[in-house]
Amino acid sequence: MRMGKFITLEGVEGVGKTTNLNFIANYLTSNDKDIITTREPGGTAIAEKIRGLLLEHHTEKLCNEAELLLMFAARAQHLEQVIKPALAAGKWVVCDRFTDATYAYQGGGRDFKMADIHWFEDFVQKGLSPDTTVLLDLPVEVGLKRAAGRSEPDRFEAEKKTFFNNVRQVYLDRAKAEPNRFCLIDASENIEQVQKNIQCYLDKILTDE
Ligand code: Z5A
Image (cartoon, rainbow, N blue to C red; front, side):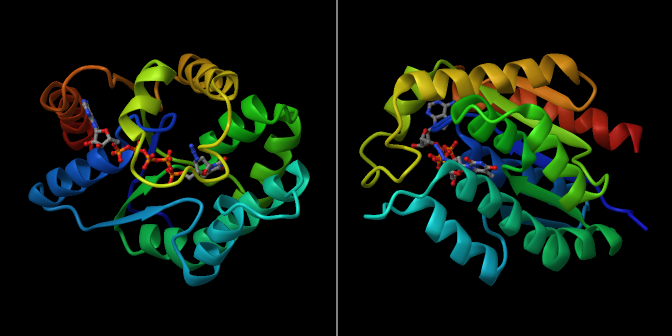
């Protein structure tokens, strides 16, 4: 039985997911919600090892099919070990990225058919999907500039601008197709305004509960 709520954060590189994940976590906690924060790929010891494989550069090229399967392998482990038990215990799960990222990066970026991703989604998640997805949107160049200079670019960060523009477009298409689940936030505004807008949305969820 699922009692908690499942909230995910999405967006291209540098939109402020990590910054706002902490804000959401603090806001929900101050509203007496029992929450956990987690991330994808990752969130368990095994899934974090898979994250390492996915993000690191290798001398051998990681093929796109292996990348897609590893994303779902990490997700299966994460769901089983962390997300499902937390939701069943009535906790709110706030997760930095989930399957929308697979549609955006592997579908939009790597050109996999959306129907193939959908098949894996059904196989791994068996109907479990986020209640709410906060999509932080901003022009790709701005996000890349914000994220620049933090560390050596990982395997995804090293991709070209066209890749990220395709990723962004899939996110926007998905938000348009599911307006009830997505909360679309203009992440080009200053942090205070972005968080005010997120808070308005969270207040609605808390009131509707
Ligand atoms: N991936 C995938 O391909 N398929 C999948 O299914 C999944 C993931 C689940 C790892 O993700 C990679 O995995 C990701 C997609 C792929 N690769 N990429 N690219 P990740 O989430 O760990 O990595 P990330 O996207 O690179 O996140 P990030 O770079 O850490 O960005 P962020 O968390 O969105 O941003 P931030 O660290 O909160 O903020 C960046 C900077 O901007 C920071 O200095 C902030 O202080 C600043 N900031 C934040 N908000 C603002 C505003 N409003 N104004 C000004 N400055 C701001």
